[in-house]
Length: 140
Image 1 (cartoon, helix red, strand yellow):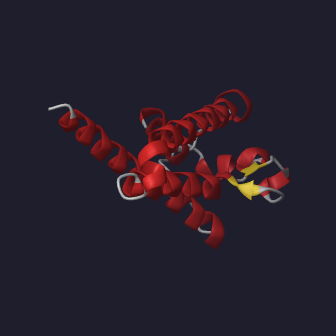
Image 2: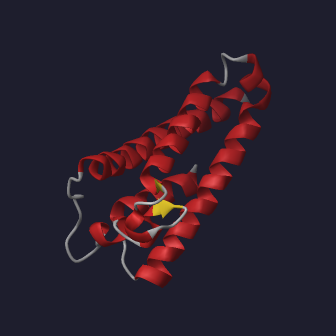
């Protein structure tokens, strides 16, 4: 009986990791190809957010000096997804997978909150994709 809620939580976590991977993958794709981001007019301004000083880590002018945060998000969600998938198959992850997942998602949550605060209090602009990613990481 106790494994059923745990399995349900794992399934939800897998779905959220896939959603996050899709969002971060889309942002990474648009950044790598120079494609305009699909954005809801009047609600968000993804281009301003993704071309800002804070679009890379460490922050740099035009987001060109560091690593694009979408790539970091993609790598983070991919690592979380891989850990969830391999958790029951790899002995190391059977023992430490839960702790690793907590650490990765907590770091991802803090980084998402930092980026959300930048959107709210510095840029005064929102990227709907970034908000979806932040909500996804928060739920994870």
